[in-house]
Amino acid sequence: HAPKLSSDHVDPRFLHAVYIEAPSLAFDRVRLELVHMGETVVRMLEVARQAALFGSEGELRKLEALDDDVDRLHEAILHYLGRVGREELTTTEAKRLEVLCLVANYLENSGDLMETNVVAQGTQRLERNIEFPKTELAGLDGFVRNAMRDALKALAERDTQLAASVINRQSDMDDLVNQAMGHISRELIDGGEDALQSFRIQSDLIGVEKRL
Image (cartoon, rainbow, N blue to C red):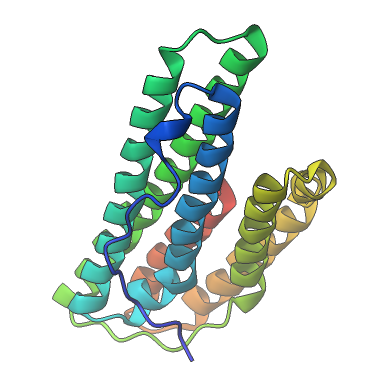
């Protein structure tokens, strides 16, 4: 069964003002909030293909709402880091602030990539009243979700070995992307009049997953 699409207006959990004057503690709070933000991005990943290929207008709007949650957390994190940055920071602390900003931007961009591509393609599918056959790309989808979850776990637990293992999966990712593109290319060759639209949507989704 496809995961249920839902967004309950996600707000920051860990960005407490009491820590701002102690940058090392504040950065730990940001790290936890980034994991929270990343979990919302994973929720988007879990439903993106279903929403694009088969979802209703309501499901597409809920995916937009999840991206709004990601944007809300992103804004809160950057605002919090901006306040921390006004404290007197060591060189190491300043570098850590920069890295945390980069992670927040990466997650926000990931959400925007999915929202922009999936909603646009899904809306076009609904406007043209196109129905696609079920397509099985669970290998790639599952790989990307697991990699994202492991990256978040590495961030939460400061596990450098796990982080390195995620980075080292790139060649496996490339193989799965090539397999997925081969699969949808064969569907294009063998398919009917809607096959081109299906190919465009799925190739866009594969491109998004590859960039994540």
